[in-house]
Image (cartoon, rainbow, N blue to C red; front, side):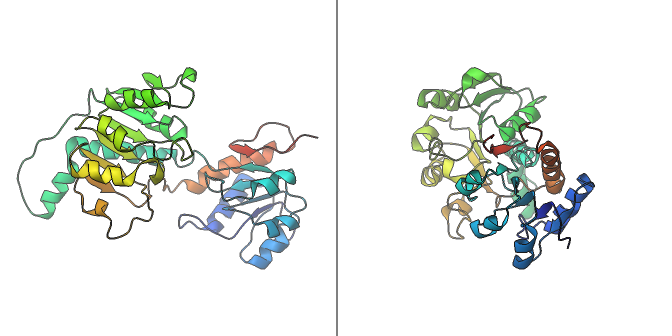
Length: 323
């Protein structure tokens, strides 16, 4: 352990990935800096006293009180609602997040889920398990209409991967006047959302969970969706009303749903969603990628280089006040 490290990696890991690997990757990116992994609470307390940059899931206020030289906290999550933002702001510490590093994997999983429903591959898997050679009919993805709710990094990655499939795309975003990569862009007001849903074969939810989007897809919205449409939730479970979704799937108001996120999460073993054949569930694994640390190290390495230059940091969610 280096006592004079200017970049410190906190000990708590994420997604089953080794923080030691993260520290090693950061050191490779920044050979001119001294990167140290704090393996114990004692090492964290000692190392943060000299660090200009600390990175990890969160930094508690007691640890922050010791970090007198801290200029940047690089959160290893996309969300920062668990981070003491007010305290960091009062100390003039910039905060960045890991937004965007999961987008390729999440987008690939969304595309895969749409293709599974299109070609009914889940039905093929069931028949294979039963040793049953019996034909079934499938659909074509070509000429479908795909609505992507949220055109941030994940939504954009989904739209990019839809190119070549010969589908029509509708994007829903907070400021539709900005346009976007989809064939059409609508807003989050109720009329626009229902307009998009009414024309959709597939709906991909890729927006953040906030006061505007909580319960965005409820019974009224599911009633607007065509009966042969499929809902794909890649974002947060709370954006979809779970009880309304169960009802819609049970009564075939929509063809199916693919959920990488649920409400509640984890999904209890006795939850009715598990028993629905027209609902595919994965345990919030869409963002997993072996390139997690590589992509995050690229962001942190670039931001360490920008410290003191006055340039805006990559993925900056809190900027210190300029004196």
